[in-house]
Length: 302
Image (cartoon, rainbow, N blue to C red; front, side, top):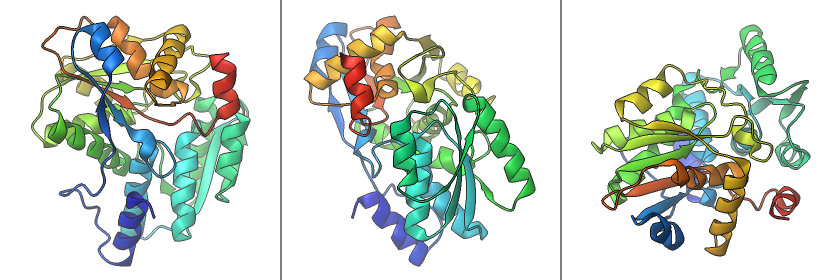
């Protein structure tokens, strides 16, 4: 059984507190030879695609389930563009909790099929992410369910903080780049870096008008004002990347043996927009695998 799931199950059997002081899982951190040569500074990738359901969202989900257990909930509601829904549905299924998943009608069919595997109650809302977010907010206000939405769930930030802590302990980077939509990942990573007393510029890689990176489309910024504060305090930046840059980043990663979904490649694409120095040490968070969406990846790469 995957280490994240093992940690979750062990905590549910006994101590329900999230083991914040001692990280219990680690994803690979590797040096990217191509990007390091291209930008004349060491560039690393934190491979979150090695998590249970293939994305960094598993960090959030493990923390959410533990927080639910501690607070006496067995039902949750979550608005998602796909990956969070797959992850939280899987974790809820493991422990016998009920997940209510709100997704926009523009969610790719491949993602919907994966969500359905774990038997949540799916609410498909006409429109985009923000429309499903509003619908989930109304639902949460009427029902006694755990609010697992970005912007309202501290447990998600704590889960993502482990990524920052692991990066800090192994690398001590000067710059960390995160694909960004709601901002939950970047804020959490920033929390983790702070916990380990490592100062790094935080860069949000965004693609608000993308046609291929569905999970970061729109730049919803649900974690405001924390998102802006975290970027400002770190002397970081918000970088907008194009679909063509994302495609080229995906191809580069594939040639190095890493198959990612488009949104995950945004952190690599953002390198084009940074004035990198030889003394810099950059870590790109690679958020998710492309293997869950073969037809979409095939279409993009063709």
